[in-house]
Length: 301
Image (cartoon, rainbow, N blue to C red; front, side, top):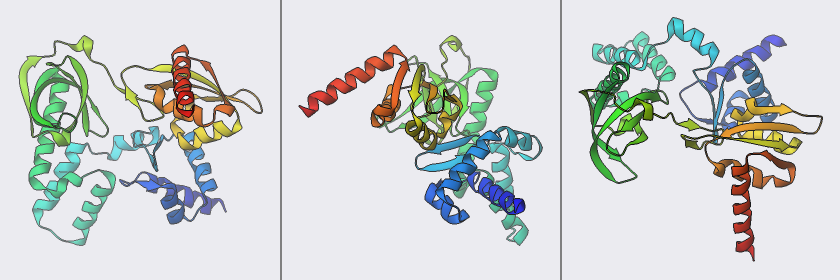
């Protein structure tokens, strides 16, 4: 019955929007559906305008999908508002069933793990608010005591923040000292101070892009592939974000014009199915592949 099918679709949709990471096995087991039906539902959701994310091995539906944006206009709280609501609930000391339900709802809708620690959550809320203000006013900030796992250092960074990313967990900034655009995690900042200095390097601000193969960078290349049925199916299943780049050429061939930030991810895909794929466009990628193949040949000699 259509009613039963609609119920399964809605249950799956709700599951994929929860604040949890689910593998295909998790989803199929909990929803009592086959892998084939799961991919069928994913295609249905994409056709309906939902943005399906696949960060191996997890699937979820992005909350910036058009449908959710419409709902947001009515019922959505910003991260700051959600933190404030949760703080109020915690401070009341009310352990009633209604208050506990509100806490659970907030935890489901927002990533509020930060609220497990009072001092940490207040610092996070302050830092986010300061960065948001700096972006709005186009002012510089000092990231106090920023912990960098790459350089294994804790230091202050003076930056021009211009873009909040990944659910306000990261901020894209232009760092004054290094003259480079960098992405900083809010969880690694001890404090954020708003400075009395306007942006002076706006022309150097560069957004960072993430391609369908989950590689990030400031530059993008367009790679055009001509694919057979097998490689097309694998691309769709393993990299759902590539769907919008795929168009059918004939009964047996498809073309994908994909924007990539690195040749590493797409080369893995192409080399794994090289008999079913032709690189049609992007001289830089062709040169990259030739170098990879030559290195492979040398190692096998």
